[in-house]
Amino acid sequence: MIQPISIKVLQKEQELFVQWNDSTADSIALGNVRRFCPCAFCTEARINEKEHFIPIYGREQTTIISIQTIGSYALKISWADGHNDGIYEYAVIKAIAAMQFEGAK
Ligand SMILES: [Zn+2]
Image (cartoon, rainbow, N blue to C red):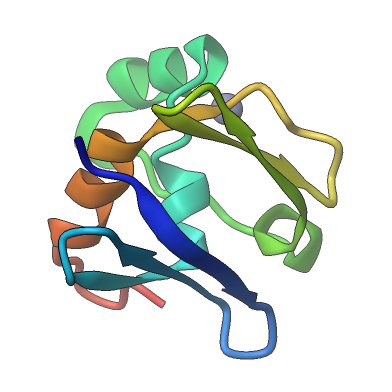
């Protein structure tokens, strides 16, 4: 079962760095972590807006204030703008990391 060994928020670089127990590591732009927030509210916004979903992120929306592990399967990320409903399963974090976006940062 995939588990993070180490999780680092590189706020200045705007990246989430996760080292996994399968010897892989992912560096994910915080904007993408926020963009793919798996909570019901953000998921619905993405579905409704489809490809026109171009969120504008203020600094507080891509600033992580805390990360909690949830059981052995997910991370709960709290953002500086107060949003903290997203429970990111490890597979979801892997999926976000695997995506490529133009101007992802
Ligand atoms: Zn959300």
